[in-house]
Amino acid sequence: MPSWAELPIGQVVRLDADPDAVALALDPLPDDAPAVVTYFAAEERSVADLAASVLRELDKAAIALFPAWLPGAEGIEGPSGVNVAAVQALALRRASVTGHFGPFLAELARRALTGAPSALAPEVRAAGLVRVLADSFGRARLAVLVRVPDGLGAAAREVLVAGCEWLAHRGRAGVWLAGAPLHDDRVRTIATPLPAAVGDAREAVPVPATADRAPAVAYPPVAGRPHPGSASERALEAALSARAWAGGRAWNQTYRPGPLDVPIRVDLLWERERCVVEIDGPDHRAPAKFAADRQRDVLLQLDGYAVLRFPDAQVMTDMDTVVRQIGQFLRNRRRAEG
Image 1 (cartoon, rainbow, N blue to C red):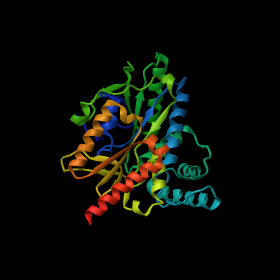
Image 2 (image 1 turned 45 degrees about the horizontal axis):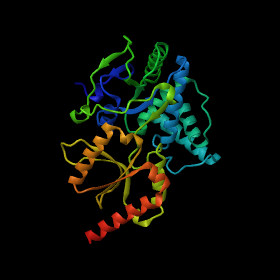
Image 3 (image 1 turned 90 degrees about the vertical axis):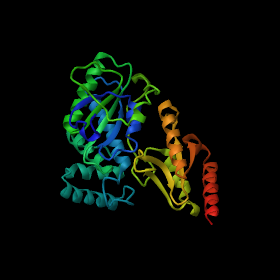
Image 4 (image 1 turned 60 degrees about the vertical axis):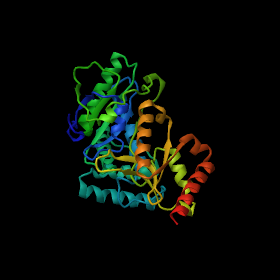
């Protein structure tokens, strides 16, 4: 079985695994894997439409992840002329020493502050976005895991494969298909390096048919920050930042209970108090993820951690209760430690 590092970049392949099992195996991102973002495909009428959809979603992810891909831009916010000039200068300086295409990086930095659309060609954007997203997670390469929905007709499947080939070739990204079958001889199927415990968790909620949803991209968090795509994580951080007792917290950390254990990514950690807070979206109700959550909780509890879980709906609608319960637990732990 290949390692994640051996999965191809710059071409389209199909993974021989359930996409939910793949997602579990990639959270946290293995050391030998490229950065991976997930594209939830929907039916498109043409290759140009599919390319535009993918670029639009990758662009949203890159802007949400700013300034992870632009060191030195931390704390620069707002569309003032001074701020825009500062991030563009940083981008051009970074491009000069990293091989990024300077005009693309400078435009993306400006748009991260202003929200303006891109004026660059799709081919330029594809290559630039792939590099920027890989940089955001400290990786040299990027793979796009394309979740193929049920219900695609023959013409839509043809468009999807051709569009994925365009992205792989123009962006130099790995494009890994998983989900509904495509029946396309151009796409070879390869073995997927899943840990045994993850590979056995095959039962999952199916991806909705393409007519039921719009295309979207999901991406990992950056260590030390709330996930920019999670409104509940950002809201909880805003609430905690005003409380002195909440000091010592760290977002989206990777924790390994033992040298032979699979690493665990936790949403929010107070290491000294051995407290983990998890914010669960609707996807945590899927059987595979629910089972994985329980296994992670047991490993953390055996290592002395308490795991406090809150549905993201509760975080967004009853923040006072969530904050009060976290605070009560931390104060109890600190009193017990003397």
